[in-house]
Length: 138
Image (cartoon, rainbow, N blue to C red):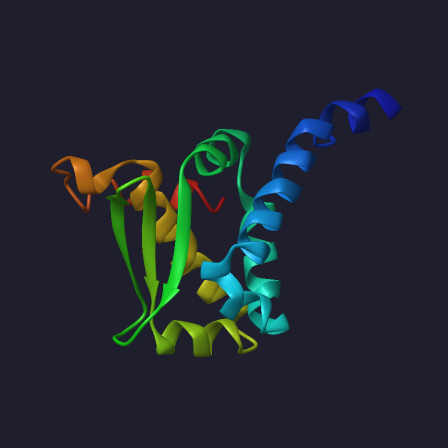
């Protein structure tokens, strides 16, 4: 029985990658708005904890920034120079600060999915790829 738990426990490398990505998100100057709000930090921690190893590897190699701006919910921009941008609008910030934090985390995960699957770089069937996009948060 003990071997079952050892096999299903996250490896140290995955834990270290999650800690490294969280450190990046909380200490990068573009994310000071996240660091300044403990409630929003909670959502980012939930999001990073839900990522699988391929996603962690990708986002550790491809700097991705959550940038607050005006409009509704969020929008993934894709590659701009050496990084990707996700625009985070006031409505999403409000959701992340609410008791519905998982709803906000799902929206952020959806936007990360667009970047992970490089949707900005190719034509996609949005309805056909919905399941692939959601995999990032499962």
